[in-house]
Length: 129
Image 1 (spheres, one colour):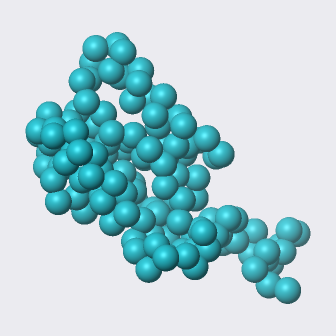
Image 2 (tube, helix red, strand yellow):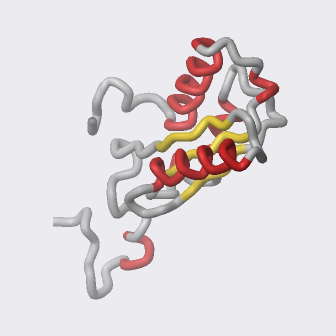
Image 3 (cartoon, rainbow, N blue to C red):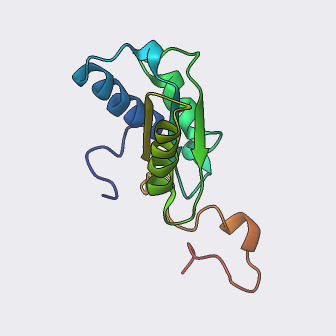
């Protein structure tokens, strides 16, 4: 929720908290995690620069050796991340994958990644009245 109770947290921190809770709750050896896959539609601001990798780097339990990849499916990024994780496990190429999605509307409102492109052009700036 915009400006909600979690608004003061960085999205990588929130993602890391969820991943750490999954590791703890399932009593996983975090070294056994093969991949961390997160989807995000708006890769700008605090959600840019491979948010999945930043979640791994922010985690207190997941080793730095575990890779993280970010998926952008424009409206289905989190679901696609889970699907890629499921496919990896079903194919036998990976055993443990953490997958999910992140979108922090307080910090990165919808459309904020296109305002630099559209500027004051034909479409105008959606954040100006």
